[in-house]
Amino acid sequence: MGSINFNDVYADAYVRKSVEVATEQQIRKFPSLASSADDIKQELWICIAEALDQFDASRRCSLRTFLCRVIENRIVSIRNLHLPPDVSVISYDATDEEFPLYAKDEVQQIELRMDLAVVMARLTPIQRQICQMLMDGLSLRNVATRLGLSFSTFMHRHIRPIREEFRKEKIEKSLDLH
Image 1 (cartoon, rainbow, N blue to C red):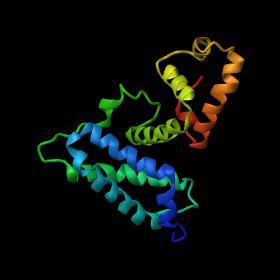
Image 2 (cartoon, rainbow, N blue to C red):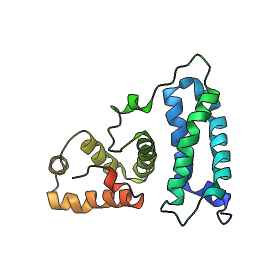
Image 3 (cartoon, rainbow, N blue to C red):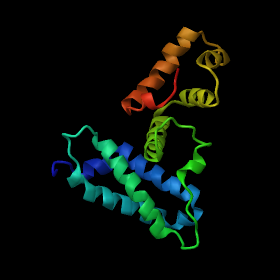
Image 4 (tube, rainbow, N blue to C red):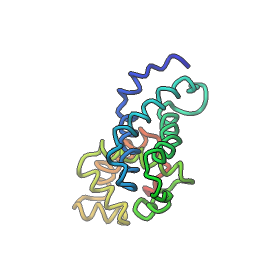
């Protein structure tokens, strides 16, 4: 589909952040990749540019979701090209304890992590603090109490805007925010 301009995709903050997060995740897992970070990003952008012609807007997939899948599918092969031959590759399952996400499979977890990074970057410091307390296992009522707010005020001032940010990325159903 030739109507998608690469410059528009490159200018999209969500896609740029997705490329950054995918690269950073690989470098955290494999520090020896740090010197290849720019090369990895460049290869991801080339892959994105080549994949744009394959995007079909009539399918039930947004351009952002399509591009995240392109990144996910390509990052592993790019990583393997840049890793020294003596480095063993571990699966994403090793990080599940650090990031307890509610996704069905490895690909969805990677996509959800990228979406979460984008959403968290847009939240205010207090909203990020609230999310951290919820991820630490506190209930909504306990968080409201810790902040010295009534439950209804807390829900209106803080939880509703947080949920709206998650809705914008269409990931609110992937998270347990009851």
